[in-house]
Amino acid sequence: MQQSRLKLTSRAALMASIAAAFPVVAHGAPAARVDFAIGDVAAVNKAGQSRPVAKGAEIEEGETVNTNSGRAQLRFSDGAYMSLQPQSAFRIDQYRYEGKQDGSEKTFLSLLKGGLRTVTGLVGRTNRKNYQVATTVATIGIRGTEYTIQYGKSISGTVGEGEIEVCNGAGCLNVTNGESYYVENQDVKPQLSNKGTDLPPNPPPPPPPQIREGFNAGPTGVDCSIDSTGCGPSVALPFTGTQILDTRTINLGDGVLRGGGFGLTLIFDDKGILRDYNDSILDSTQMSGNDGIVAWGRAVDGGLLSHFVAGLPASGLTALGGLTGSYSLMSGTPVTDSSDTTIGTLNSATLTVDFGPGSVGVNMAWTINGSPLNANLSGSMSGPSGFASGGCGLSCSVSADILLFGANAVRAGMTYSITDFTSSFGQAIGAAAFTQTGLTTTPAR
Image (cartoon, rainbow, N blue to C red; front, top):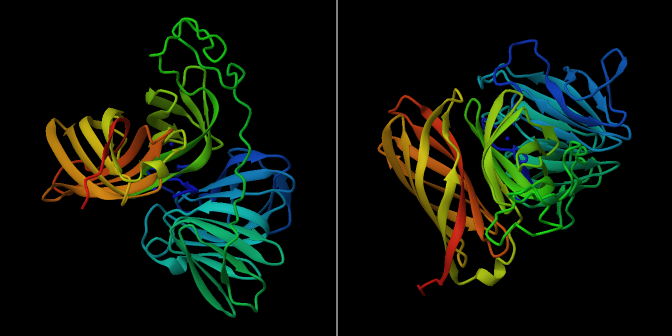
């Protein structure tokens, strides 16, 4: 199931949200599938014929999706997804993706009115000219993965991660991580704006009947949020019900895809098992842990396997300046290869975060296909999120997305990928959760 905002990463998204519903697509397959719809959402074909759409409906090239007073989320065959706001009209002008990046793939879309949030897929990653979202005011090209558009007489938006290019007849503007843009009309050059466009996420569907919001069960089944008798101070109460969490996800499609997001809606059942990831109802979940601060595991959505880690948003980071946090491994998910086969285990890992300059170091050890594998990673942190990479042999590398959780960053999570060109597995992915074991003063440099 890679920085504020949404990223749906990796064989998914993901973030969160999160990413691909169809691992391989034959020519003639639908461009997208409706992942979530609420209200009177309709699709209109080239002949002007309208039909209502619901979860699972297929959207073809040339069709326009009208959300009317509802909302919808589309998942494209290249791993992209599009969240459409109320009173939006969105058309798929041209779409081609046959499961590989060979130059023939293309995504040309039009936002006719309203607003959208999107996490882009594989189309456009190798040739940016193959991807475009058009309005009458300006067009959007990609150099990154996640952004929003709000369109009326003018357009505005914010880049969550990566970089986009906003162009019209008056010129072009590159907009990168965390920046916002505004285009008054087609004759005025796009400009940066200090006003972000934060489109609200789709409202979550109601939890299943057996879930009560905020229910935390102790060993005897008692609701510890009401009566803590028998729960004890050492009991780790899992997430249950609807939670607003920060996440990282990773999956393997044609390559490693990273995702996740900040403030995503996740729904857990009364046993703390993740059932719904940012409006996407999961086929199955294998939890590796859930202590009510961080949860991690593997999830299958539409046949696509993702590893995820999710937790309470980090707080108190400013007060940690000048300190270094040490973290020990709680546990990791089983390591899986590109065929979703379990090939190894994460045996040990340690994490250190220097909260001053925002640097991070990781030591990891696995057993994969019966052989030991070790890696030392280093990287940087920006607020609660970061990235690290390093070697695990002459032709082996590891990259990891890191996210901090809870008050004073008491937990950390990681999704990672391993690439080894000399071994049989080629690429593998996993996730892990860490607990803070100490805070020490960072030595002066």
